[in-house]
Length: 437
Image (cartoon, rainbow, N blue to C red; front, side, top):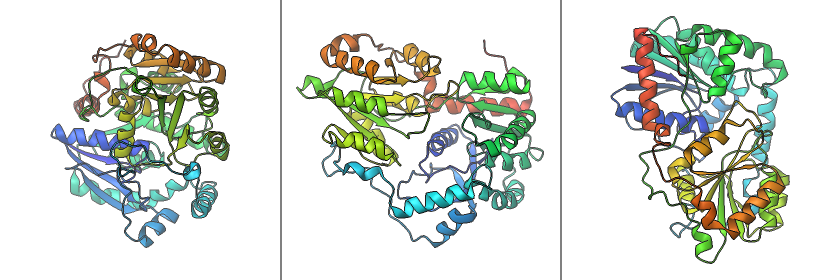
């Protein structure tokens, strides 16, 4: 089978969506699929992710400011995967390392201005270049299936141009196009695009069952058209056996927590930071870009126990996950969405502390079903009580966890890629897909 993926976010970009497609395309190639990708030429941020071997990437101008910067940028050496001369050591950096410099702030302001008129944001400037490149690419490659990767929504609009020219067009929707955080000025357009995608695509993948139910209810589409293709973990990445032990405490030190990911208005770490400050035997490392000044101010109260590392390479993030005691996930205040990092954590062999902001957070059931961690409400009192119990009774809390790998195996990227390939084959054959119970 030959697949063309339309993706704004793809390696060397190291965004969550680019990481998703790094692994899915890698595993599709391993399954014998010929994979091509249409992606923009973007400026190098220095944090890069390798394009998987065997994947052919066709790049075109990103348009606008991003395209101009990419043309003018000198070659930049990627940031090393290891940020310390001592293997396994957590590098110490100034607490404000995650803050943007003046160029970053200026770029961010300009980006926001462009997003006032360009849908869905400044990334929509890729539309003209990609739509111009697409017909020739379809003629040269002759793909069996075209897949559009959302977000951003511009890749769905580009994919719709290919829908009638190939045997199967799949939309990797992930989250709804019309979401609670969609700017008011774009809500009508997002609603129309989502409806058109649902009517046109041969199959639609989403990351949670709640999103699947939402799309079916909104658009009245056949249930067998929408399937859950969650985020995953690298099941080919070597890690030790599952041993839920708090090595920091056992060595007479602290419990070392690690959070990796982004912060959004609907993903607030304030309660976590306050709870760590209140428990002297807990320290926290945070790997996140663009951290708000108020978070940095909290960390500055005790910089030896809360460290912000800023953005790190994906390889370094995986190393840090393997070195900590407990991985922290902060749930979205949106019931239909689950952070992809929660699934990535499964590959670390370390227990997970999930801090939920809403009672119907789907991650709560996942954590309990996997037996790989604990669920705690994302407020200061609850987190402080949990951390105290963890410090005082570590063996008891770890005894609550399961050692059975069978519950997490379906979330390995190799299993998810096989599932995606089967859906592509079914879309081509037009064979009805059994509706999951």
